[in-house]
Amino acid sequence: MANTHTESGKPVESYRPLADRVRPQRLDELVGQAHLLAPGKALRRAIEDDELVSMILWGPPGTGKTTLARLIAHETRSHYFSLSAVTSGVADLRKVIAEAQENRQTGSRTVLFIDEIHRFNKSQQDALLHSVEDGTIVLIGATTENPSFEVISALLSRCRVYKLEPLKVEDLGLIFDRALAGDSRLQAWNVRMEEEARQVLLKLAGGDARVMLNGLELAAQLAQPNEQGVRIVDRRLIEEALQRSSRLYDKKGEYHYDTISAFIKSVRGSDPDAAVYWLAVMLDGGEDPLFIARRLLILASEDVGNADPHALMVATSAFTAVHYLGMPEARITLAQATVYLACAPKSNASYLAVEAALNQVRAQSPEQVPLHLRNAPTTLMKDMGYADGYRYPHDFGGFVDQAYLPQEAQEQIFYRPTENGIEKKIKERLLMLWPKKKR
Image (cartoon, rainbow, N blue to C red; front, top):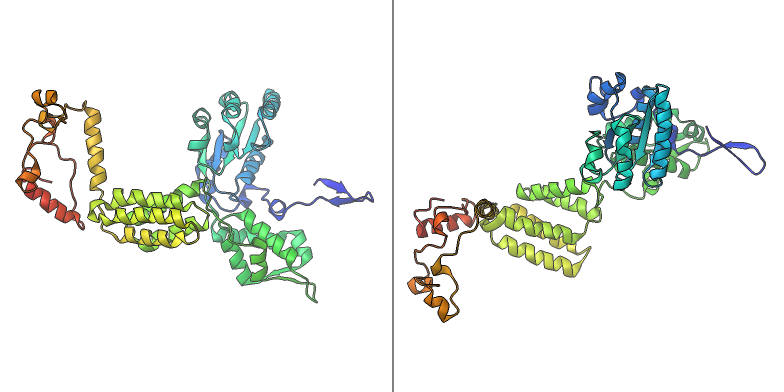
């Protein structure tokens, strides 16, 4: 362990956070990620069989990416180098690669761990390609962002991606118990945790072991020893230490996309309770309310459509109101629109109609507009037959049977109304007007 010195010259142990002091030293001590590390799983077998390949560890903070990288290097007796993409550049990479080449000549392997690899730009990631390709280094990159978007395709194709999941409450509980029982500093402080406080800490950690351990240590520091020298940590101290719930929501992170997806699918699935829940997650995470309002506008047309035409009016009005109001009042308007759209009958017939029409247009060059439908603002155009034969529907009571599609497309049906809501009446009217088109 590294040492520092006081002014008197006496050495003192340098401070290490609890999360670092209780970091697992063996693979079997690592908690969580059973889908990757349980006996027989792919990553576990690769480590045990000493058949490492370069990899990207993708997952939320505090799920063990850094610890796992260290353990992989330790278990496979590899030289281990660690860089942070925030503070390192190409020069640092070249230095490690040069040492890795020397190690290779002696028959030993080098593992290079790069934390937050998504922060490397393209040229920095390019600098890794050759060494990863020829096996000079085994790259282990860690990222909280979707590597499909943040890691260049050439590097991604040379790596295996392993997705780490947020730790379960049971996993956090095991880590907590080990830390409280095994850390010398907590033992010296004589810390006692009330069960309610323990449960609150595990819940507020949000699947992040680092947040949980930092909260435990800070709460223990805040606690004052009683007459028996015991530091009792209660719920109040946990809430003071953490200030508030540790949020998973990140407006630029993977959880952002997962949450908006859950929101959209809940509205589409006509579950107002779930829709409002995911709305609350986004609002509590600081999401731009206009971003949510725009999603509601899309939902109103794509998923409700003409089953309830009022949905688009509600969504449009909500967007305008959110723009005028801002937070926190906008949350009420967003909730109203969300509940309306979730409860409305659903139809994606309009969405399917325009997609089918676009496919038709793209598959075949657009046909010439029939003469009787063309614009005829001049005498010359009228003499050329433009608008000739066009029958004005209002002269026939509002409808007249005539062709509106090019000859080659007249049999096509793009819009197929559902039996839901108002669209059922629309379907009945269309069948009456165009009986040959069986929708």
